[in-house]
Image 1 (cartoon, each protein chain N blue to C red):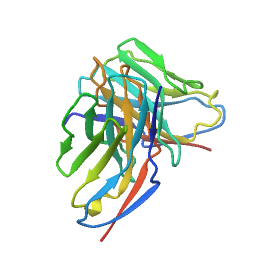
Image 2 (cartoon, helix red, strand yellow):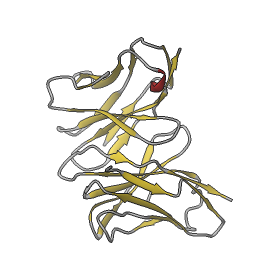
Image 3 (cartoon, helix red, strand yellow):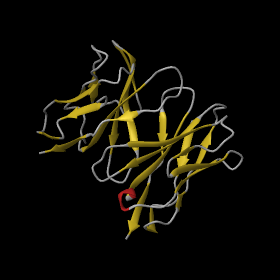
Image 4 (cartoon, rainbow over the protein chains, first blue to last red):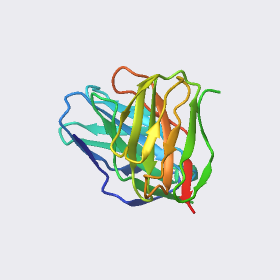
Length: 113
Length: 113
């Protein structure tokens, strides 16, 4: 079984600053993956970044990076140089050997001008 | 452009009525998924299919049915047995063969009259 905990229901950041969204996970799988998705007010879930449990380097995709600390079971998302369009709900997900994904409850990020 | 389409964007259901939500993908993915999202919550898996003519129940399959007659299509029927169908429904697809990134459609919002 897998469990995802996102402890920040809401976060605020000033435009052009960096922000870290927290995610901790619990899993019994030896091999697993962690995902971050963005859900704007339109509702579509947009894939941002993926980290495999055996990846030694932290994943990066443009302004997004994943701070993966395996021993602490954390997979925090870092957004650099925030933009107004980054305002959205952000979900941390985990998946194991089957196809099922476990979702966190999400963090609502608001970027202020 | 490759992607996932869902229709309609909004759907209204009367008491005792079955309604069908459409999901089509042209990404050539083998696997497709249906999720339900309630306000302020993450997504919960309803059904998934890894191959044509085969599908499995997810965590909340009661009151729902699916079919997978074509690779591109995975329609979801919300039956009258689903007593609380008001929610946002998201369809996703992915490659198979272990944990893969899922790509989502724009969603259908179902409301009960």
